[in-house]
Length: 318
Image (cartoon, rainbow, N blue to C red; front, side, top):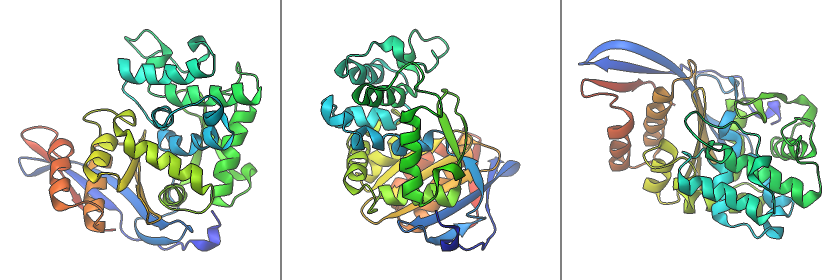
């Protein structure tokens, strides 16, 4: 993103309080920003330049080259395959089979997957990033690239992903700082304003327009493959009936795009708390009018009440 398009203005961040029978017990701080598809900051809480590793929130962007490379068409992959590539799935039989389907279609054995085998599981297909890894392998198979080193940041498939993100943010690829995510592939250090810009383009941008529409359609048609039953991203997308796309990332990262309007919200909880991320997103989506009161209350029942005796409360506005 061109830094000149965004102001350095800061506002008070959000505070998320844990109340036990109405008495303050713990608290979290959260920075949030809403950006349009041109990268313009529309409203914020805290500072839009707050940096964080994107972690799994980047998966919908990492999935774009599956389409632009021609791999999706060549291997006759489905929208469900694209959804599992965008998702952080729970490792159920259904989701593991969906990741396996990508490899089956491009005639690659599942032993090629280099994501870890989760504790108490039997296969890397059950890892929550197996769909993303399978998509990277499918691109390699289509392009004739070596598969064994597909996780290396200098591998052509990782460079293709980096180039895609760089073009969307109008930045030279060399300016991005990367580090290995827990699954072994590169993730990138981005400002939350940049994360929001990426999702705003997903929700209605011009660059890569048709591939972006395909990614959005897969996420809204198969929300259960993005996170799983009872998980925030899945529940939010099901309740919004295709009006919102949602993808979380580890360490308190959350991105939500308003489909068809080219707007997106990105937030980061300073201490990495998932519980604070969820309740902050509900609060902000309600405030923005992207979520009805009834749907906000339904989500709050699951994500704002950690126990019968405690609740999470958000203080502050975007």
